[in-house]
Length: 285
Image 1 (cartoon, rainbow, N blue to C red):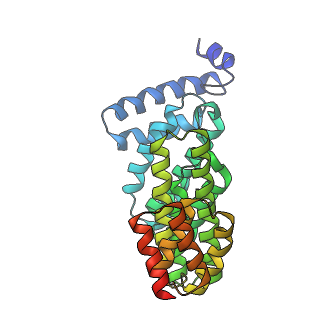
Image 2 (spheres, rainbow, N blue to C red):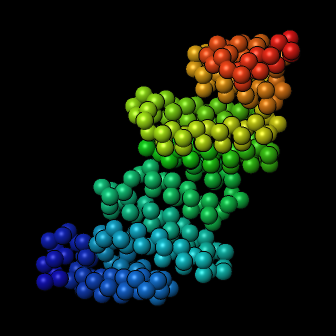
Image 3 (tube, one colour):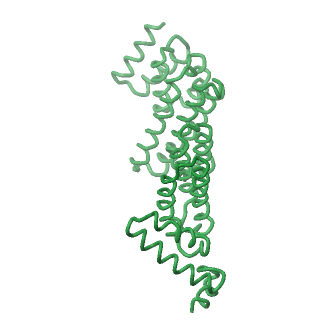
């Protein structure tokens, strides 16, 4: 029966009748221990199931994340631990390979980046690369928080003098551009999705804070960065408001960009807040 089942399902339970017997035994063993939260005892039969029959069930990968994470936490040797982390990362890739219809590539990529963050929190280059890859390769399907995490790690690289002002400013410009695209799409496609919109705005604020808290956000760089953005979005209150807010926060108010942005902001939103901004502009003049 096992032989017929294995052949009928294209090797789902193993390539040979003996594989099928061993596979099902190990599946049963690891599942029983998993249900008892005995992840240490579940580890070996789970690994054997993964070796014998990787196509048998998506639960091999869903539950395997927890089993493998617990195993990693029990390892003291750095070399062995690094190898185990690589196995955990590969587990995500294998899930995508064997169960593509039940897996979302963007989500898998984000979870892998989170694994890097969990085990290598000080490797800011690897983290920046991982999160940037998520947001650039998966676009609208990507978890937008990846952009904010990429920016935070870029900030660490800048502060460690591993990237210069120009590179850091370019990263900021690129990531904010991606976030603005997402906000624009939400507004155009599903403006009532306030949760997605709030998440996007939270990410945008995190990216801006990571930039303006550094020396790279000097007045010259801000003017260079924001002038073309202002010119292209003079009627967009969110963009104009952001430019005004950042220029004010950095006391970069004695320049044409701030004058133009402050007047545009007041026209778009004639409120007490924008009037105060306009007053600051006139005072600077």
